Amino acid sequence: MPAKKKQKRALTRKEYDKELRRLQVELVQLEEWIRNRSLRVVVLFEGRDTAGKGGVIKRIMALLNPRYCRVVALPAPTERERTQWYFQRYIAHLPSAGEMVLFDRSWYNRAGVERVMGFCTDAEYDEFMRTCPQFERMLVNSGIILIKYWLSVSDDEQERRFLGRINDPSKRWKLSPMDMQARARWVDYSEAKDRMFSVCDIKEAPWHVVETDNKRAAHLNLISHFLKLIPYEEVPHEDIKLPPRQKRKYNRPPKSSQRLVPVRYEVEA
Image 1 (cartoon, rainbow, N blue to C red):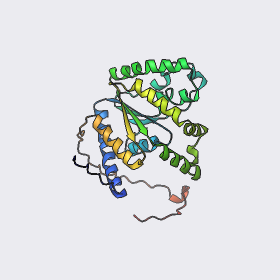
Image 2 (image 1 turned 30 degrees about the vertical axis):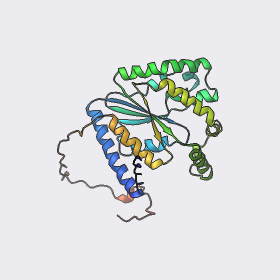
Image 3 (image 1 turned 120 degrees about the horizontal axis):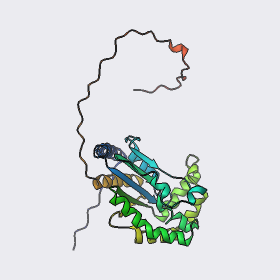
Image 4 (image 1 turned 120 degrees about the vertical axis):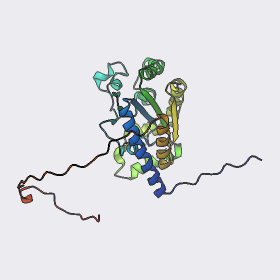
């Protein structure tokens, strides 16, 4: 009989926090490498509503310098943008040398919500499916490192998260009429995603699927995978010495002349 696979022990919350911190420090080293080598990196995060795109992006960004790594989450296109070449408004947000851009949803809106909800014509959809692989090959051939993640959530877990948002006033802002339609049209979105994968899962820019029913596990799995996709080394730094403070005399105005915020809380150091 074949040997049974040994089940991995689930991390405790404390172990999760420690491992997440370690990975976030590595992300800082990767960011410095990207700057040092003038790389251009684009990461797409797609998936159903409640799949956890915002959560994993938040944890990736936690320690990074927003001057060199930025998040792009575009609203619905304006009337003017609707008249442009479809990819045009995304091109404006692509990185320059030494930058990394994280797209919280991307040009794949056309293959998902626009297709399912009828926000684009059949001709516009067909044109996207024909040209998207070409567009992405152009990006890669230009030297951009393009990485695509699909965050996958199960039917039951999505329902649980939607109910959590409905019943929690602090999360209710995350709900929109479009989210309700996404839930109602689960099968339509499944069909659209499968069709998109069949065309756009290309060798030059493949899709990487992350199971997200367990959010914390998904954070660690995605970040550790991402760190392996771009070979990097620690960038050497010169020793930093803190200069002595000036000794010049200067009489500052009293604090009483300033509008101080009242001290309502005291916290132990």
